[in-house]
Length: 392
Ligand SMILES: Cc1cc2nc3c(=O)[nH]c(=O)nc-3n(C[C@H](O)[C@H](O)[C@H](O)COP(=O)(O)OP(=O)(O)OC[C@H]3O[C@@H](n4cnc5c(N)ncnc54)[C@H](O)[C@@H]3O)c2cc1C
Image (cartoon, rainbow, N blue to C red; front, side, top):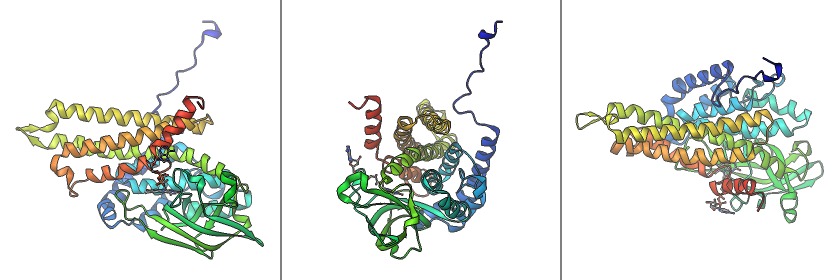
């Protein structure tokens, strides 16, 4: 055969994993089953995440997946973070979001935008024992994030920050916050600067913790900054370029939320498929009825489609291919799938599914946040529309 006719091997299936990825995933799956599953109901009821589990996340190496080995991290890929978030969320979406925010938002921002000196100060801590949080939203700026009012002023060698942040995931557990403030509210997005703020900084307080519908064990808190002193050396990236940090980290973070929603949908689907084999009506398992079989099949198809989108977006990110549209689509679709699949799971459980004695109602409550944080579904649609319609 002439050389020019030799064919390259076909690309692998979109869901194919390397041996290392399979090991990594199986390890987390086992950890989630053995260590998290027994605590899920109680953590949800109390609205508190078990502190020791977070300690175990650090020991397992999943709080610094992409952090290079020279700083003590695993030196892994973004895709591994996605696998971790999916596997954890299959058991508990609160566990999923703690690891998601740490890796896809906080570490991601620190890895990309810190100077060497800041890397040395912060990356080893993020791997070892410090939880991170990402503080952009405020009471009057959510979708319109760059209308934020928290103000930073340079006074001597420090920035002095005043304002309040709302809805901050990991607020209770975090020691380090990537916090966005404006140096000049009149300058719009161009005034926004990102800071690395530590919990111990003078003038920084964690305020009220929200009592939520879903992901109840994940803390969502207000942050209060009253003349909070932040050293100049803690500016993240360039002054006035915080908007770029916010946009770019959230683009990646969205793939993580997609993974969380795939995990939630899968967890509920697995319960429903099993229950359908066990529950008998009219003298046989309800799973023998075609009506139920079709629902289970539709749910499985939805989960598969969402996972393909999430994995593809994550692989594109790791390959350095533009992925903004795919990330927005993956988050939009996965959160729709999660809501649909978890809702059907309740129906398959019948009346029992509507009670807190069975696990599926929690999955449904947990699914709802997928359409809200890191950009609501309308905001994802706006991004997708802009990209597919060429700005028209
Ligand atoms: C549990 C939880 C955890 C969170 N964690 C974090 C965190 O860690 N860090 C952080 O910074 N933030 C966090 N958030 C905030 C979250 O990102 C915002 O809630 C979200 O961006 C939506 O903002 P909003 O709540 O102000 O809603 P709004 O922006 O007021 O939106 C209300 C509705 O209006 C729609 N809407 C708004 N503008 C438009 C438009 N132009 N076109 C069409 N529709 C529009 C929205 O889609 C939505 O349906 C969290 C929120 C929750 C609930």
